[in-house]
Image 1: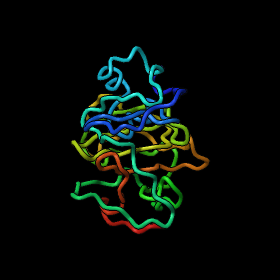
Image 2: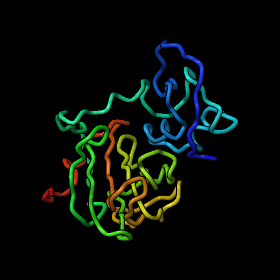
Image 3: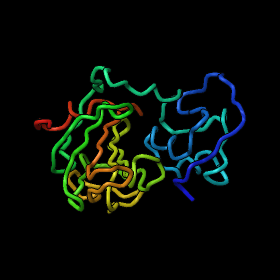
Amino acid sequence: MLGMAILLASCGTTKPVGQGQYRVARGDTLTKIAREHGQSVDTLIRLNKLKDGNSIRVGQVLNVRGGTATAPAPRASTNSPSIAAPRSIDLVWPAEGRPNRGSSAPHTQGVYIAGVAGSPVKAAAAGKVMYAGNGLRGYGNMLIVKHDADFLSVYAHNQTLLAKEGAQVRQGQTIATMGNTGSNVVNLYFELRYGGKAVDALRYLPKRSLQ
C-alpha cells in the first residue's frame, strides 16, 4: 500500500550519484524520498520500474527526476538562523488562526497555525498535489503541493484531505480541513521548501503578527 513505511536492510556504497538521482539511506522510505524531492510515490515507482513501494534497499540509486543528487541536508537546529530561498514566490496564508514559528527540529523553518477543527486549509499558491496521505509519522493527514520546478509546500495535521494526489489546485482553493492528526492540538503545520530543503516560510507569507 502506498504511503506505508518500507523497512530497509543491507549496506550501501558511498560512491557519488549523478544529478537527478538519490542514493537510499538507512531509515528512508519511498514516501519520505518522494516528499523530499517534490514527487509522488507512484512517479518514483514508474521512474525506477519498481515492482512496488516495498522493493527499495539501502544503497540503491533512484532516479528522482529533477531532484537533488545528494541526501537532504541535516535539519536545522532550534538556534539556526532563518533560511531564505534564492528567489521569491507569491503566497497567501493557508489558514486563519494564530501563527507560531516551529521551535524544534525539524520544524524551525515552518509555521504552526492554531485554529478551529474543520476550518478551511487553502493552497498557499497554485500547483499540483504531489502527495495526499498519512504515511509519514508525526505529520498526520498531509498534502504536498508542487508550485514549480523549485518550490513546494507542505500542509500537515489535517482533519480531512479534500484534494487528491495529481490534482491541480488554485491559489486560495480549499484543499483540506484543519485537524489534529499526528498532533495533540488542533493546528495546521505549513512548510515551504525550495530545491527539497525547508526555507523560512514567514519570509514569503504576507505579514501577520506571531503569537
